[in-house]
Length: 266
Image (cartoon, rainbow, N blue to C red):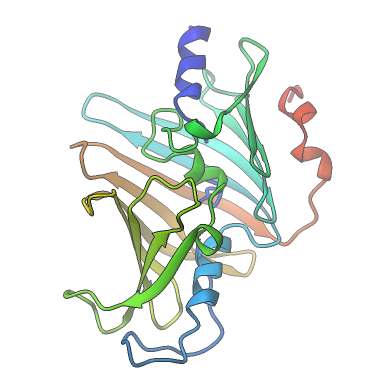
């Protein structure tokens, strides 16, 4: 059983811290969704996308439901983040996965398996792998990649554009370790809340759709409290992440983001 659990985690480990996901917050100036709006600060919007669920610091309680044609399961977890380069995730239920933990510091990431009492380093090649059998990747949850730093971006107007939405296309930079051919993000113009994010492969084929739902306020910050990831090539598969509670820009003990904390008995 420990071997199976290790294999599953090596195939991909926790993307939610941003749920500690994955992205968006209000920008500074009014904008219009057309190519003539030269005053739109696209860079500020993209930075807000990166920082939506993180801020300077964040801590959150999250529920993840994984749906497949043959089984369903639910994980609950706690997530702590500091800046864009530190993330700590702890699974609190179910009993089988309780105590599994993930730590990212900069470009390095580790997983801890309490049943085997082992800490495993996650190689860069595994960052785009599935976490715990979900439709989110390791990178989705711990946010190693950055839209602001790893992509070029511009406003676009799709054929089916809604008049109250902004659309931003992101292309990976040549030196970025990104597997996607491009991303397109739709944002509500009135409050800069994200609506959806589409992931395309290198052949411009739509691969994943991430929907943002149920806008709520946590600790004075307004965010979509539900993220729904739907793969386009796996019928009947879906992963839903729900924020149960969250706090932002509060003091967080630096000891949380240590390898010693991975093994800590709780």
